[in-house]
Image (cartoon, rainbow, N blue to C red; front, top):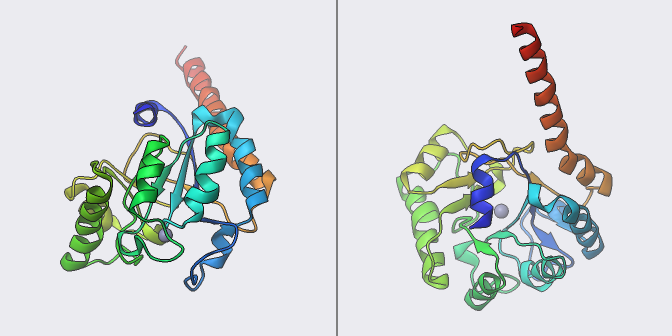
Length: 229
Ligand SMILES: [Zn+2]
């Protein structure tokens, strides 16, 4: 609840993780650069702690490392996150299962929908949209016994049509991977994905971004006021 309240009116940095440590399943083509080491993950979280009220953490793809490493380290720092698993991977090797999702909820985290087959949502036909946006969500909702209101768009690929379909399906928010700070518009809600080549300095710069934007806004407001006088 707190997160949604905060998101109504704040400028936030939203940081997105995929896999941590060693994968326990065969990776998709192009996926490896999105897996980070445990050490990187701990360092990045330590940078988030001081600005946690201005930061949202998300995880895509429903890897087992979400729980085994992700949630464990979050808990030690009293941080929470939103996890976006794939309905089509539930219970499969190296991915989260139903009991894991329930455990994440129990630990105070949130669950959203990342679709069924991990396909692009950019040019979905009606049947594809039904499967990815509606059926996948129903399956995840049945697994956790709670309503799901948020989606994370696979590969950050979307068009105007994707956002319209998400709204029509009843979602309240759709996360993209566009980078930059969140300014209160839920469709899409921009995130920044960390990668294996992401440095601590990169994370610091990203987390500081909302502050410098705020400063810029204050400066231009002050200037506009001056001109009005
Ligand atoms: Zn994904």
